[in-house]
Image (cartoon, rainbow, N blue to C red; front, side, top):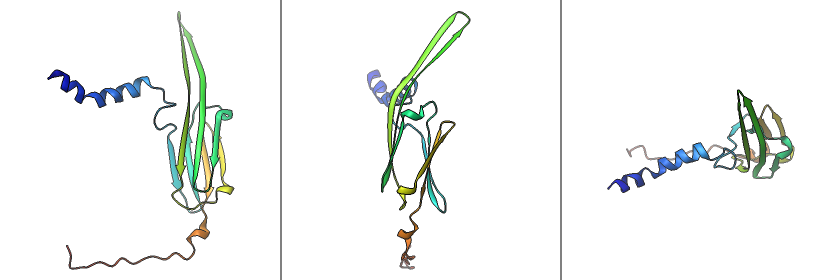
Length: 142
């Protein structure tokens, strides 16, 4: 019976393993991304601290954008008789589909303090001829 309880805890054990032992880069959903919409543009922000700009690649298309990057850094700490060397290496790739029509040819990207920001103007011509559609419903139904 004890073996079955352990099996039921397997997802919790895997989550603990994933968060403690796997590097942030190369695992699941890295980098964290925010997508926001303003009146004039779509803004995509990705947190990529410590990634050398030379190792960051952005490909943009008509319906989606792809972010690729590679980390290769070593950090050494020497203090009071001990030495610690930590390495982080790996690669990532994220593809984000646009929720609205955009002018991808006019997009601009900037990188400041580990935050990649991509601004893509909306294609407002795609909204021409659109109208609000009334929804009919039976008011007698609950």
